[in-house]
Image (spheres, rainbow, N blue to C red):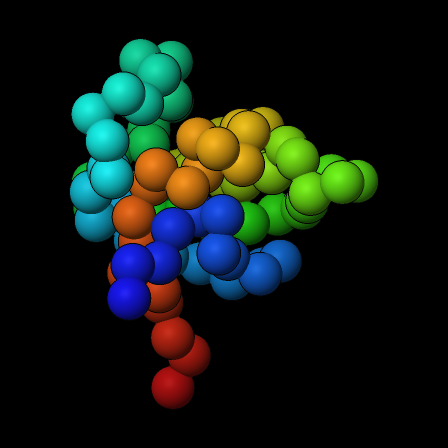
Length: 78
């Protein structure tokens, strides 16, 4: 099963694996949304769009449709 940023719950973290499509906005790449970086869901706006995420210390608001393109490996707490 593919897990994306859109599947995260508040406070949950994951490592970016790859992008479902190669159409991710350049601005997100410049802000650190790159494979291998950690992302955390900070907050979800009313009506579940946009999502506020933390990537490398930068808080970014992204649309749910964009979040569904960023595949993650969930970080579990043992």
